[in-house]
Picture 1 (cartoon, one colour):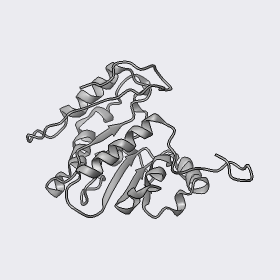
Picture 2 (picture 1 turned 60 degrees about the horizontal axis):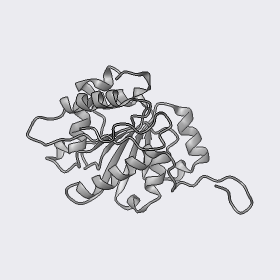
Picture 3 (picture 1 turned 180 degrees about the vertical axis):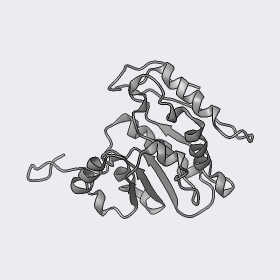
Amino acid sequence: ARDDTGEPIFLRDRLNASSHQAMTVVVALGLGWCGGAGERVLPLLGGGGLVLPMALLASGLRQTMRVLAVEMDKTATELAMQFFGAATEPRLRVEEADALDFVCRGRLPSDVPVPAVLIDIDFLRGGAIPETFGSADFWRPAWLCALGSALGGGGAGLVAVNTIGAGPELVDALAATALSHAPTDGTILAAGVFEPCGSADRSLRGGWSH
């Protein structure tokens, strides 16, 4: 967009990417399903230019939620801080780290309910599931965080993954892998993958996958 003088400006409350729009719906659902009262923390693996957390915090969600973004690209974070207003957002914390290592080392939040765990990294562009991303070392702590297991429950139990660049077969394989590492304490889990029209990588195929 442009301001009154014609200069380009960054609108932090707009999301053009269909994957970010879908993740926003997941967060909204999760906030409604979280148990208990008080503040929530939203873990975002793959901060990139911090567009998604900035848009979420520009809404009324900022009153009850903080965002923890994990991004290993220092340059991307610095550009977002300098040009996109991320430096002035007190409810956004950015950890400079490898997202997979961050999860495997048990650094996801465990002391507050989370509405969802968002994974906004295009891990599947290479045509296969990266070894660590398909391991129990990653998915067990991810599920425990999403379900709020350390709190005796209370998490919404939602995990959203950006699967851009992957075909339906690979997406199904990822869903099966993730669910195979989920807790087996009687919790009912389901995976839904929606492939939106207008995808930059492929046409609409398959619809929902279970």
